[in-house]
Length: 124
Image 1 (cartoon, rainbow, N blue to C red):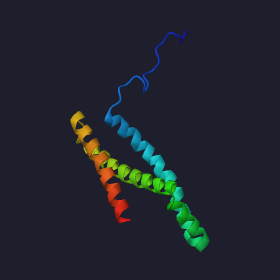
Image 2: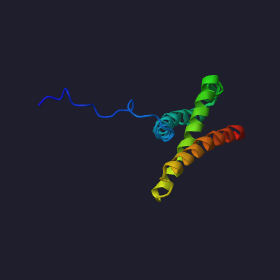
Image 3: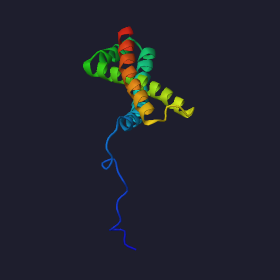
Image 4: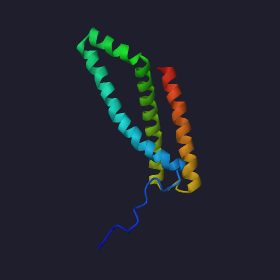
């Protein structure tokens, strides 16, 4: 039996990109980013217990441009993942499954994640 003439399974290139599709991918990516960001927190804790020199090195890194970008990205990933998780919990109750509802809640999550990140950044 030859499989050369069979069509390939639909792939991401076949589908038209939708906002909810992007949010689903972002939810997975931010979960992975939060796991990597935990390494930064572990470095912070280790630097705090190691001594002044180690903490000064950590402080210097986090106040550099790349450190600030990493921290801002990590905070955004946390806020986005948290809010999108709440959105999924609402879906578990059976609400918000219409196309319009899913799109609106996704837009709200994305906008609120940006606002929440800015609020956390200003407060810190």
